[in-house]
Image (tube, rainbow, N blue to C red; front, side):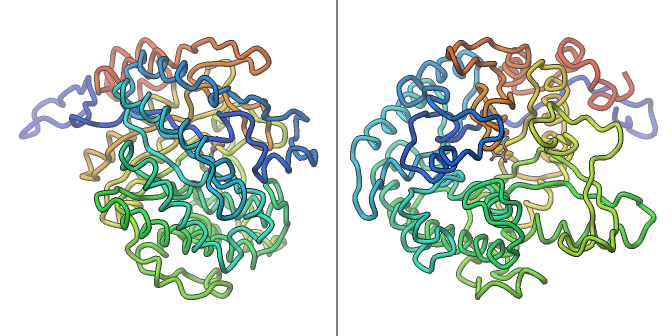
Length: 458
Ligand code: FCB
């Protein structure tokens, strides 16, 4: 509800409209969707028994053979954008040797998207490494930036006529923390703060080198990366100590990469572990933000490993399906506007490159879609150049260490049969994409629990 002119009665808002050309998309990743990626370090990780549910990626969503069937579904929903990644381990299976066959398949896929009126955004690195690169130390290696930039140049040469929107790396903070601090992702190291910081710095250098390599081949390329933001708030608003530890965790987790790109350096304590980041400065044409969750942080003297702050989920917060170990956090789509504002500090366009929830029963997802859309609209109204929203994800896919237990799809899928059944959320999201707007009617129909927050005063 907005105040009318001169104190006149408030104007009832019934429609949140987006600018012409806004991208309504879905986000996906090669390993999670393609199937058969046996040259990647994640396949070795699976074989070593690290998938908690005991299952494997297998055929995934069978995209290597049949992605086009799901592209048809995206087109039928009225979507105009899709984020996918290319699998480095297929394209350069051995160091320095390029396989033309996967390139031919990616060309087919990108053409398939364009023919359906869907703009591709291609991610070059979404958590998976070729086994040879992993053996060299992955992003801890001094060679990482050179090797990744060579791959980026190859991709631009081979696919540049079909795509100009590139996301170099996905969630460098998640990749490095899960791989070197928590041990949930390969290489499975734990409590190695120095390696965590250096892996992320290595990714920052690799991103910067790829940024330059992509532009050298394709001057008009639009290049960014996908930053994962966890909203971190003090557990007790009035506690100074909670506020301080929440702020420190926020800086360490959320700001490292953006600081590297914005000013070519990062803050304490991470700066103690990393080298000069000045080459990273200014290397982006857009910022992608992945926003799923919020945690509250409480000062805790007994927890030096987490910088004296213990994170938890606020009581009674919506959490989605909890997964095998713990939930992803409070599901917090309303954080998009706040995080977009931070990303906009770089002075570049912003895309919501991921947002979603694991929700097999589709009870919470419509609320998430309504709140995420409203929050994206809030960012737009605040003057942020927000270009698109990519929901994670189109079809249930292989959720890393959680295997097949987490259903993030607008469309449900039984991975043993590949049978898909659209959830009601698919219909809701499709209505938004077609209207390029979220209307009161849609929220009443699909997500009544979000009505008071999205259209207050009705
Ligand atoms: C993000 C990842 C994506 C998927 C979603 C649920 O952190 O980028 O691959 O796992 O979470």
